[in-house]
Length: 296
Ligand SMILES: Cc1cc2nc3c(=O)[nH]c(=O)nc-3n(C[C@H](O)[C@H](O)[C@H](O)COP(=O)(O)OP(=O)(O)OC[C@H]3O[C@@H](n4cnc5c(N)ncnc54)[C@H](O)[C@@H]3O)c2cc1C
Image (cartoon, rainbow, N blue to C red; front, side):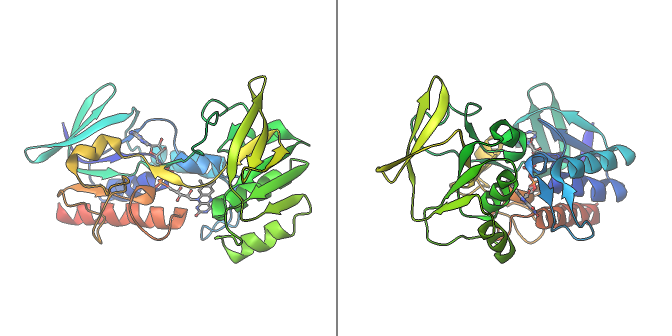
């Protein structure tokens, strides 16, 4: 079978694309390697999506999945390993099967970047984390560190401040690059110490668990955990042969979210853009699907 549209990724961008594609009468298949909702699953609370005052990330993910099931949109849990073009069709290879479509919407999001220091990879899950919602409660009443200065770092530090005894918030600049509202809220937290103009130069372990971090090659701070929010890398390896990504792996798209390969679209966190938010990812998924439906 050749689908009208295969969507890779069941985060907000992929779900939005699927809703619009299905309702426009296209034959659709979603391929997702892990779980519905994507990165939303690790967000404590979403408070800036229009029409929803506040919702826990995992609840929003379940709502997305419910909508997919209500609309009877077919999906498979499978990892896409290669995307290519065969004559006028797109070939989508997964770890299990091969699928064909006239159009593909890639919505595979990004992964958190870790600090490039010895021990860091080994200590993930042993004191080092990129998910406050998943691991925060392990450090109840402990002293921890959060590194980063953007919206994600501040939002997650706020969540952790309600659980842990103390947070060292480490940032390499002297001011944050986050929303004014978040900056105001984090500065009002009595258990957050701001460590500006600082980089982590070493992470130290004891008995296989993070024990302390070294700042600017001089000061050592004992901590039970380090939460890293220093940026994200796109997940687009499976498309690298198509030469439609920039040197760091983000897709380059036009105003309809189509790449230079006709029929291959990209939406959400994996494209080059200014705003990486739920509302923009949802809008991009919808726009690509509507454009495809108008071509039919
Ligand atoms: C800590 C944090 C807090 C945030 N808070 C907010 C907030 O409060 N408000 C807001 O608007 N935005 C927030 N954001 C940003 C927002 O979550 C993202 O911009 C948005 O969710 C991205 O959606 P997406 O669909 O593009 O990607 P993702 O949600 O990352 O979804 C991509 C999906 O693709 C799947 N996938 C990846 N590779 C493959 C493959 N090869 N084969 C099959 N499937 C694959 C993944 O498993 C995943 O499910 C936050 C982000 C973070 C990290």
